[in-house]
Image (cartoon, rainbow, N blue to C red; front, side, top):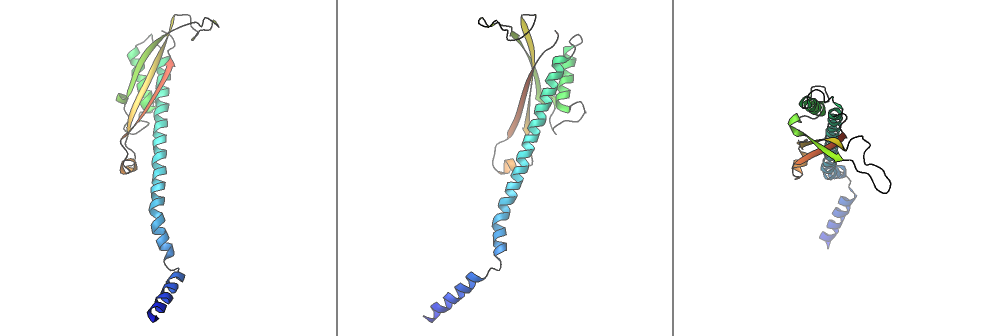
Length: 167
């Protein structure tokens, strides 16, 4: 009985003592908070990279669609691809993104008229409209948290289509 009373006193004294409680709480919370902060950083980096690639693809398609075809189409495509990747600055918008990651294709769309309304799908004097499509892909390397968490490699893609002006 005497041993039981001592044990109770010792336990009640231990329960009332708050020394070290903050240390225990910090050891439980800090890893979670660091992982959360690193995840926010990684996710924002992914979004930023995706937006830069989309802006590049859009700029490149716009340039190619408006380039003077009287010269050389290959020259227009090379310049448009360069604009997509570098923005004309000479350095890549995204580290590791190259002109080899950008593809260009053309489509000819027939102009049709809706029999009920008489409206055309495109306004043009010709019988077809030519569009240019610029696509890009980028293998995201990131800061390493993505792979550390066990996710597969992430490939960011973007595409943009513009109506070609002129011939």
